[in-house]
Image 1 (cartoon, rainbow, N blue to C red):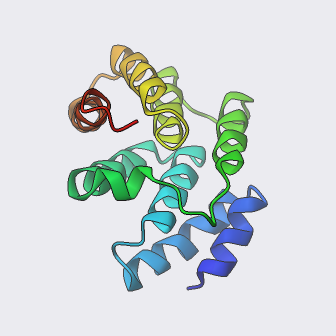
Image 2: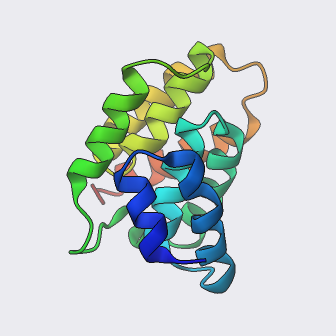
Image 3: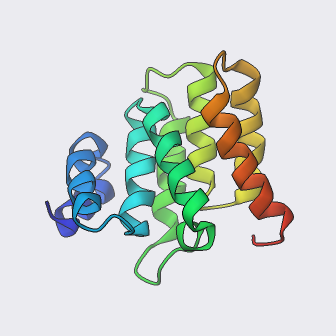
Length: 147
């Protein structure tokens, strides 16, 4: 699996194609935060929000600074475009999944806004356990002033 190919798919909004490539990168390099960020976004945009939440919890619990800090090679506009794509519709997501997906993408744009979106998702989510854990990790990060 190739990070270069995964990045091409991600930049072309071919999120379904990006998922297996990004998983392959993480299999070889389990701490690759750039691949993790893009995989979370790709999973959210392809309706696999619970998987995106689990990955976000895993990475945030291990090293929130590493996950939330974009590298110089990453363009924040990629995450804004992904958020616009999610909000633009065309995805078969429930209101809870849409808000949670937006919260995950917002982690890399504005963690304070991610909290708002995660709270919105929690208001609709019948099984909020993992989402509540994610929300609490983000809240701890924001409250510590790391935004």
